[in-house]
Image (cartoon, rainbow, N blue to C red; front, top):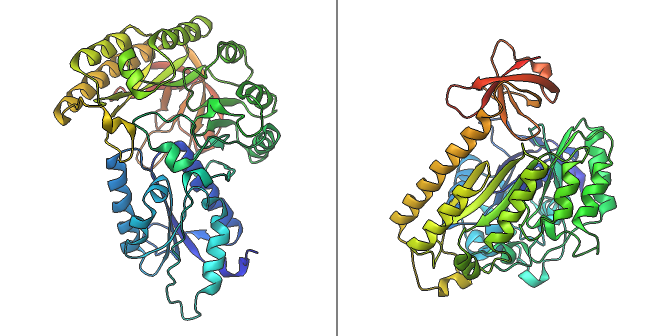
Length: 448
């Protein structure tokens, strides 16, 4: 039983590290606490509750998590500090020993975060003394809960969590250990959440998860069935699919998106390596030929589609020859943007048994070459659209930055200060794309 009285007049501070899924979950936690009377602390205001939602995709991410936890403890003395997320799951003992951390919740426990907080605050003494509540984190095989999440936080777009966990034990990755096995809610429940987003004024929804193409492991349904059901929700103007494994991006799904009412011509597809030998070392479930087929089909059915691609450089086993093969393959593909990640050693992963090690200097050089290639591809893609008209969903401008939004195919568009208006926030407006902005990161738009 949640004791709502203990939350009255409390303030909370939130910090999210990592992916869109984490952002969505933190936003949902914030909304749940808000409904119980917890106010988000203003900048510079000391909070009663601190929530840190962590990431553990690389050693750099682990280090940043520790830094943020220490900073939150320092900036909010006496606050009840809760740490959850992937790093909390994988390194629960280490996190629990950080001075000032009161509660550590793993992937199974975070679904009941509000209940844990309620119990802890109810037991807290009336004198306000801190109560250390370290909670044991479940093992990977025991992670079975699914915490629903559909929230926009302070953004225009909603993020709808459709799946969690992963059954793909790629040799470099710890995510299955941190998130558990693949699981999902029903299509009916997700349709209901989308309808609620519309009732709150939402126009665009991003489908998020760990391996969302694997949707249906729990319910026996299929991802394409989910897409079709969501497409029928009146009021949702746009859907975007955050990331789909190449082997799960079916030809039928591509064909459906090509004529869909609301699913945008925008795909994010993890490649990881453009070398078949390295893909085998990674235990990926596809080869270059399949990946190239998916890109070709998307571009044939949706010529203006934006395609983002994840690439990992410097993984164990990636010899100079294999990297050159990867570079040439990516150069040949009609994709829009490369998301480049240097390989990071993760404890307990099978990749540590692969003998060939890439130096940090070579990782940086390879990353730069791919990032330079990405800049060229993105610039060319944007340039092809100059002079055209496009529908843009605008977002409220952050301080010191131009008001911006995105076209259907995910081109970032900025309005000049003289054209921007506050009531454009969350509005779909037609603009003429006139040229690049000052730093080439967006196109300038004029309201038609």
